[in-house]
Length: 393
Image (cartoon, rainbow, N blue to C red):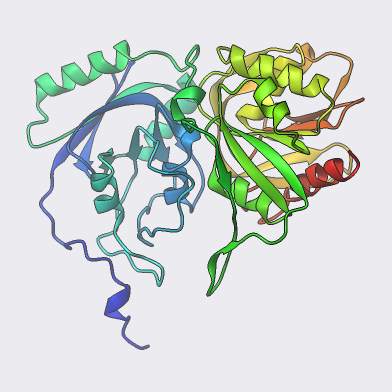
């Protein structure tokens, strides 16, 4: 076997000094490990993600704002990081918890190592703790707030302060984070999907004009729409419906995002007006939940949520089982939905609602992430459905 190309290795030192860190949960449970990012303290809701790959996409997903992410796969960081595998303008996760950070990162696309990436982004992370135990605890007791402290003096006093900080942190329920992570002003999006040897391509001729609400939108959602001939105008979360309708779009997209959907009254009101105008509407994740509220339904806080890349979902219309990527802590209660909508998708893990559609309008939504390449393209047809609804307009 040929020796590996040294140019593929990340530049992080193999024997960097160990900096202690701890993770304290609101119930008083404490895990000790070592720092893998910035020194300091961070608080957030601790959740677990079962995906085996995609840690860079997870960190930069705005839907993780206010959350400390535990990755259940034991070896994280072995392919390094690069400038292309990002889903937004920066890291939004409040912190990262992993079992093992390999000393060497190697991949032909790697430009840096994970620890340096976290440090440069001022994100606190911890490794070398029992993530299996932590995950079991979260599954049994539910997601709860936690605090990571990293630095040279992580002593008993620091532990006590961390537990107190975790207990004082606000619950995710009741938090409107969509307008916090959203863009500040409208902008045009023209980048299409990635191709080997080309990178992200420019979009081709546009057939439709889509206004996309940014509640924490992932870039690959916009790329998937652009690849299907959609000229995109991305608008802030609080944009009134009248401003959107004045642009005379062919359709409106409602993005993913973090936090509790119920406080987003500005978005719910705008969505109702847009639906009443008869425009095709497609919602993903938080957009799905906001459509549920706009329809007159209600949402529920889940015990530990769905976070992973291997969740089976049944398409009730076709009988097909889809392998999906999921990232949400709230769900729409199907029993609360009115008669003018119908359920289209359900989770095969726990029967939670995964999709519904209006019976009399070109409006539909999906709870998972069809752009995240689960399956790898099982759910891509939903983007095609949105385009077809605009063709019929």
